[in-house]
Image (tube, rainbow, N blue to C red):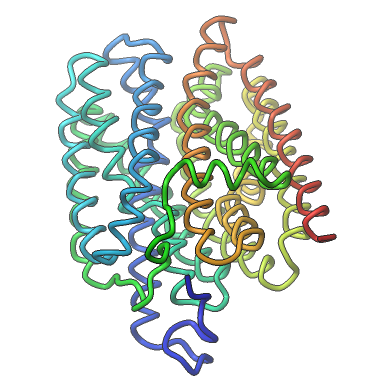
Length: 410
C-alpha cells in the first residue's frame, strides 16, 4: 500500500485540485444522508413503539441487524472499492439503502422490519460509511484528519435538517411515510454525487498475495498488546455512543421533557457536531491525537452526566448545554480511532487490521441499543441503563489515553 502523497491530490502537493475539492464535497454530501439515517433512529424508535406496541428491545434489534449487516459487508466493500472504485460502489450501495428504507415502511411485524430496514438498509448504509470516507481521505489528502472531519461533519448537518422534517411527517402522517421520504432523499443525494467520487489510481487495498481475511486481521491484533487494547476501545466506544444515540429521545421524554423539545435538542446536535468535527479534526492535525483525546474524554464523560441530569430533572438550562458538550465528546471519535489505527499499523497490513477493527466496532454499534433497552425494560426505566453507559464511557477513555501514552513511548 502506498502512503498518501505530499499533497491532497495530484503530485506536487500544496493547493487542493478541483477534483480533490469535488471529492471532499461529495463525501460531505454523502454524510448528510448518514446523519439523517443514523441520527433519526431514536425518533423512529419512539414513533414505532407508540404505533405498533412493539417493545423497545424488539425495535432496537432492528438496529442491531442494520449494523451487523453493514459491518459484515465491510471486507467485501473494501475489496470492491479497490477493484471498481468508490463511484460505482457508492451508487450501488445508495440504491440498496433507499430500497431498504422504503421496504421498511411496509413492515407489519418485527421480523419484516429486521429483513428490510435491518438487513437491506444496513448493507446499503455503507454508501455513506466512515470506512469508505477514510479510504478516500487517505488517498486524496495529506491532512487526513482535517479532510475526514470536513466530510464527516456532513452527518451533523444531516441530523440537523432531517430530524425536524421527519418529526413533522410523523406528526402529520406516520412513521411509515417518514421512512419513504427518507428513502427518496437518500437516493436523490447519493446517486448524483457518486459521480464525483473516485479513488486515487493506487487504492488502499492489499497487494497481490497479501491476505485480506478476517483471520489475518485477528492474528495481527492478537499479536500486539496495544492493538488488543485498541480492539477493546473499538468495541466499547460505539457501544456507549449508540446506546445514547438510539435512546436519548425516549429517555428525555420518560423523564418528563416535552417531546418537541427533546427532538429539538437532538436535532441541535447536528449543528454542534458540525463545528466540533471541524475544530477537533484541525486540533488532531495540529496538536496530535493524545491532546485531542484528553479534551474528548472530559467532554464525553461530562455529557452522559448532563444527559442523566436533563432526563431526571427536566432542566431546560442543562438541555441547552447538553448538545454542545456531547458534540465535543463524541463527534470525532471515529476520526481519532481511525487515525490511531493508521499510526499504529504501517504498510498494506493496515487495510486488513483496520477492516477487522471496523468489524469489532460494528459489534459495539450493534449491541449498544438492544442491551440498553433490555436494562431499561428490566428495571422499569432508563436511569440504571445510562449509569452503566456512563461507567463504560469513563473506562473506555481511560484505556485509550493509556494506549496513546504507551504508543508514544515506542
